Amino acid sequence: MKSWHRYAIALVGGLTVGLGAAWALTGGGLSNGAIANGPWTTSLGFGTKATDPVTRAVVARAGLLALPAKETVYWSATTDAAGAPLDGNCRYRLSGKLLDARWWSVTIYDAKGYLVANPADIWSVNGANVALDAKGEWRVTIAPDKPADGAWLPGTKGQPFHLTLRMYNPGTAFRADPAKAVLPQIVKEGC
Amino acid sequence: MRDWLGPLAFGFILAAATAWGAIGAIPYGLMKIASDRLGQGGVNAMSYGNLANPARQPVVRPSPDLAYSSCPYDLSAGPLAIDVTPVPGRYSSLSVFDAATDVIFVRNDVEAGGKPFRIILAREGQAVPAGAEVVRTSHDRGIALIRLLLKDPKEIGGLDAVRRQSSCATVTKLK
Image 1 (cartoon, rainbow over the protein chains, first blue to last red):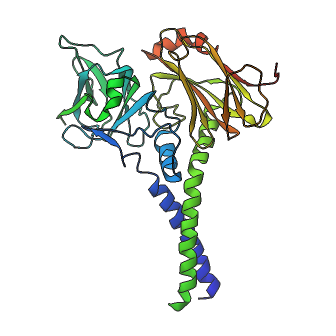
Image 2 (image 1 turned 90 degrees about the horizontal axis):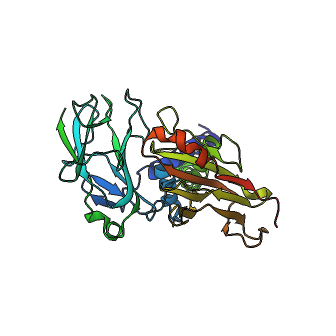
Image 3 (image 1 turned 135 degrees about the vertical axis):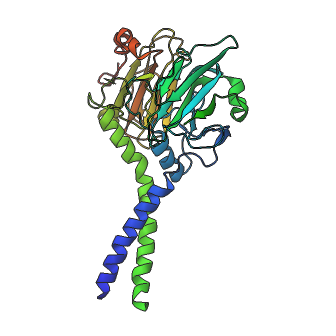
């Protein structure tokens, strides 16, 4: 093998490894240093001036054009209350009380963060369209098939899913300690 | 094996430099893609996007509850005037992002007192209209985004006329 052959191999290998490393280093979402609350995690780093290039790239990939925490807090869940990954084949109870924010919504996405077609054209529930029971609680069923009664957020069979909880203009009590705030429960009822 | 020492060292240094360069380029690249997808009406003009659905997702994790209006901007020809008209009783906000994805301005409807407002977005040193509220940035390009919350997607029909009162345009007169 000639010398330039070895350098050519190193050139291709170096570029490939470099690009792969950049993609891998910035693809973890904002789980590092995040605030956890049950199955929900958030980072208050969205929408702020990033302090280093890696954080900026991570934020750009996970939440491009996201608002700062004073305006909106974005919570993400990829597991249920028991820690099992959210599975589109299963039925879940998503429930809670009204949240400490001017407005909130829960949206269902695929594992890459995109909306998936469903026959009902429903991808979210929000504080304005959930019904409260006598105890002031709301309840939504996440399942591939429409439940007999109550609100429905369609899951997709054969696909894992992620949930994003948005809280617009969160209250000062919430912002003082987001890790202790009461957030919606995600409980698996069956598969 | 000794023949490989030079190429291996070269490969390692190249990999590190490539990774560093790519990490720095990712935010700019993603903003460029988002500008192209959101800016159906071109640059320095407000596009009143349709609601997000599986067939229309210009950015990752779009909210189906929000009507997004977006203004991809380029300040190389002069400052940009952004006029925002809030919808009474609704959460709405203007946020301005620079080419590096950093947010440089946010104001919601409550902070605006529910009233229309105008800001001038300008590079350092660019002349701006006297008396205007000015936001300075160190980048030519970026995206200004208006979010309007809907209780139900069907509401967009009734609210579309109001949201179309918000606009953006290059400043041509300084007085």
